[in-house]
Image 1: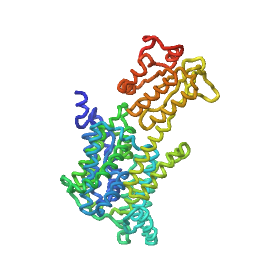
Image 2: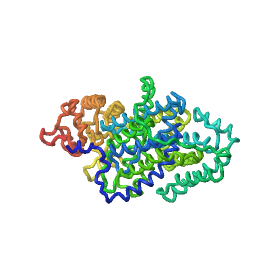
Image 3: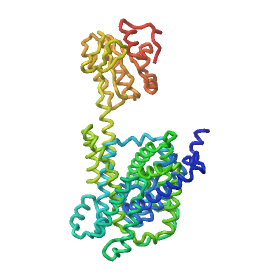
Image 4: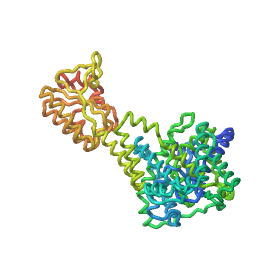
Length: 567
């Protein structure tokens, strides 16, 4: 019954009381002030009308409040995934065309459904598929995409199309056509947002910059001087309907949907874990997947595009006094009212101002500190950052992301395959067995080999385990009479590894040595020993809680049946 109650709607409002209303109202108004210019800019980044960004934000906010768990998380249009799906959709339909819009809505439903499914199946571990270096390279590549896509708007040049490098060439060729007024407005908005962010994240710098830039256009008549403006946006509310995409379109979108779903889950998990209530409630990442996924489905049903969790907006909700998702619902109501009735208020907003907002977003997602730390501390992983970044910039963006995910997984597998069995020494005067330490030699017991394997045993390292262990035994040239596997770090054993372990035990016995296992603490690994028949092969009397107990019991000969309890 408790588990069922935890899945009831609006868990994000649990514990809310009327006393919280002031904090949630302040947080909601601040969140709306941040979201309005950001959602407009992100929608244009993806090739959509600005007002679509409003409705995507409303769909994401309301759906997450209903089905998510985190009190602060803000879902909506997000600049991290927008270049990704916009680049993928551009290969299938002309940007802004009815087919493009229909496929974007279909993609939103597909991504949302995938994220919901992963949440229901409690597959939160998928969020760990991208390592920090690969994620850093991914964000750096996305940042470059955003900058290149916004340079025409900043400079007052015609919009460019094609791959990133092609766009750079076209912009360079037309740089002499730059409109100085557009450049001043865009850079001015960028500087206002940058300074406000440095003073306090609570200051809606993007909204302030947008209002000032719009006033400049009106007062100075800049629309007559070549500065492009949005024009009056249509008032009204979107109608819910199923996206009109065919089966062929769905099949074409599936690989892109899978990639975006992974990125959404990675960012959602990171956001949910970073912003938890002061009471220390444990984050429910799987429930938050359901909330963000529901936002994506709702967005698609109302003609929008995929949604994602936003770390900056979530931080605003947490830092401005918000207590629950009531703040997000307040922000959604304000944004919905603007989209439904305030289109005329946005007629003179310069496009260069929205470009300035996105340029700020682009520099914010560049993790310079991580770049520097990885370069100093892990040069090989720094190469992963560069490869991922270059792949996302130079190749079609969805291929670049797939390469990044593949590199992350390969790096994890490569790290596991590097593990070698190591011989342990006894720390003098103790019962502790430890890897050899330079300058502090340990004791070795004649005829006894104690070796550890400091990784899960699986198919990726089974052969290395077997060869390394057998080499240690053979190095004793027949003098080894007892072999103890110190297994405290072996948390899992798969079928391939079990066969390697059986062959290793057989090799030790053929070399005239008794084989024992000590400190296998993992319940899963213990179950694997029983499942694969290894306990019967070794003998339950040769499985110990400590290395010292194994050496004392077996070094002088086989122990009595009840000398040591099985682990």
